[in-house]
Amino acid sequence: MKILLFSHSFYPNIGGIESISLMLANNFYNRQDVSVIVVTRTKEIGSQLFPFQVVRNPSVKEITNLLSWCDVVFENNPCLSMTWPNLLMRKPKIVGLQTWIGAPNEKITFQQKLKKQILSDYNVVTACSSKIKTFIYNKAIVIGNPYDSNNFLQQAVNKKYDFVFVGRLVSDKGADMCIDLLNELNNFNVNQYSLTIIGDGPEMKKLRKLAATYNLTNQIRFLGFLQAEAIAKELNEHRYLLVPSRWEEPFGIVALEGMACGCIPIVSDGGGLPDAVGKAGVVFERNSLLSLIQSTIQLLENKEQQTNLLAYAQAHLSLHTEKKVSQRYFDIILDTLK
Image (cartoon, rainbow, N blue to C red; front, top):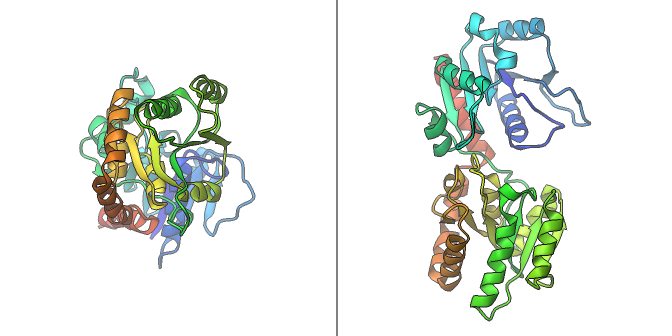
């Protein structure tokens, strides 16, 4: 079987789509009698070598030759700017929706309208969450995102910290709500809870100022940007992961990463975050500080709820390993070729 995998962005760029494309390419390549070629618009090569071929920023002629070579086309998110020759060549094609095509409450562009309309031309459409399916293409098959189970796993360490936030420091991610929550918990409870903020971005200065305003500088650690191994180590030392996104996340892999390291995730109900935590996390009303506070206090006071959530985690995580998710995609490819 010859699989042509299109990913508009790829290594050395960093992001969800890039990591999923790499994971799928590796897993497809490692199967018997399977060849895979990755096609991307990313020009940079980077230092990493791959066992499969990567074609960067190809011409129309190169794409046409690759389409002639392959048995099936897989697009990790629609890549019409590269795959349009297949509208004529008609090779079997599958597309995985990993993010919004025109996010909720945003004005949709002509290009986004075209992408939505052309989804019915694919043999199979998958979506990373039920919200993506509902909003973009109701006939999609939901396949949740995988997490890096090699880096993110529970270790025998002391849970010496309370809350942790991991993400880019922009207003849509809601890190300020974590600081507001800590302040309210101080007012409500005699316990002095801790908060760690991992990540960097334009809101850093504002967040530090907010922490100082509440006199919380001794309770909050700002660690900046960390690599995956360092993030996993920190998550293992925390009890609760806060994901208070104001933006409707397409999925929310960070919730799985925290769960895998023994954290209980507390997430907003926007987008795919409820899918990401399943029965193993707490969900509150998006963009509502009151809902976040109430949900967190209820969790802190209910040890039985905490025990139950931690008990659900392993079964939920087993559905999101790289091996499990890759197999689901590969089964769809096999069914398409039949």
